[in-house]
Length: 115
Length: 114
Image (cartoon, rainbow over the protein chains, first blue to last red):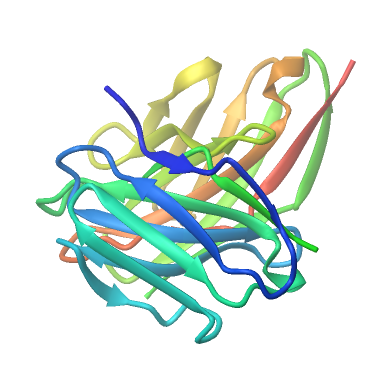
């Protein structure tokens, strides 16, 4: 089975540019999570969706960040405009429905560098 | 409310030595407990999990963890470290019940010396 698929794996951009990160969750999973990982702050939950609906976006750092999930198989995280402090690894994770144990399945991450 | 504390952000062991990574949790409901491993430039991968039943849980790559309710701990061990075990390890907890949000600890970086 394919796992969580993220693209791009690496992105280098200049300050002020728009960045779009993409995620395809595991088929059949109904919850999707976006995390950010930095040396300073560790792993931070940015936002999560249940059945394509954003449930909690309290972790989104600023209005420059936005996330969408137009259907069950695709989500985007957008940063506009980007700043050097946004440099981090962004992870997408998905989880099956029915409660379960809460276990998350992570993608390989998108490493963003903003110059 | 849930929280996880991992004691020691960095642990260094010699190859062949015992690995012990500590994790303590708090949860207002019976917990599910997890250990994830993150190798360099990769995502987090499930190492093992405790849900119910046997309190000693075995995972991949020879790792195991024991759920101790009285101590609110879920320490990760491996009898003999291998160079390939060098990675970052995350302990996490979720609660039995609606929502089941996963709360992660701060991570422990394991270094293995030859």
